[in-house]
Length: 339
Image 1 (cartoon, helix red, strand yellow):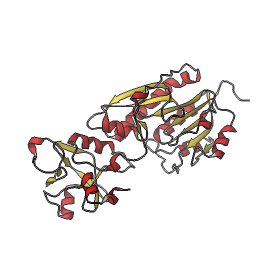
Image 2 (tube, one colour):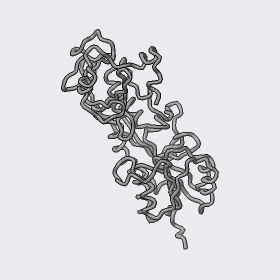
Image 3 (cartoon, helix red, strand yellow):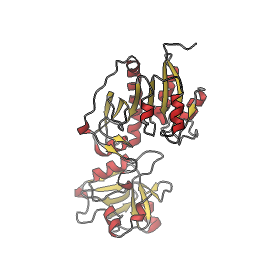
Image 4 (tube, one colour):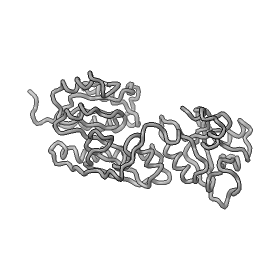
């Protein structure tokens, strides 16, 4: 006979935070997990539980939990499968990569809650940590009620952390993952007791980012050295492509870290993107205001190498330059920057 005190949950998620949340729910004595819905791309290959893309499929199956991976949440068979369950009290999403259909949102008695890696209403949508590193002094995570608007539901709880000059998207993600779990643990009982907060988001403060990399990952050397450094750090995340530039027809990925060199130490009259010096320390490149010392690069998605070896491999000399976005447009070589 079912214990009437148990709350019935459908869990949807993936990656590190999804796995951590699911393990917590499995241990909770007052929770019955009706179904686990995993991201479609999870093939169960990542078994290390502490890496960012840990497999929720492995966690669910190891706990003998019902598990499915729909290609689309708008699929009628998937929606019917949720409807045919013993009606859930709550749907929980954590790093789930699809927008929920209104027909799904209307199913649970209490509603649906989601963990999002930004201080909402800022940075709704995709890659929120990346945009925080690019644009802000602080990053955050928010537990919120889900509705038909992307990350637009009322806020339950939110917390922020400062972003240091050494932080990358990956380091910030790991910090926020721990905070997200604490937010979830401290507010879960409030949610099921119907005492959780409902703070309406201010629409005038909302920002949204669609899927895809900013600027197609292309470095604009006309920008300040600090902006480019932020761009490189924002696109530093294992498993994802790095910031890039071009030399002739070669894609050169710029690896973190880079070092900002002040204006007094560089040539003032060179165009942005110009190579000022090549040494064992790296390649020095002019920016819009200062210069950046690049230590490591990848050539056409190869393994990382010390950047000075680029000079040896291709006889690179000071005075030559990396291509900027503007020059690619001018030279009608836009095909080079389309993934």
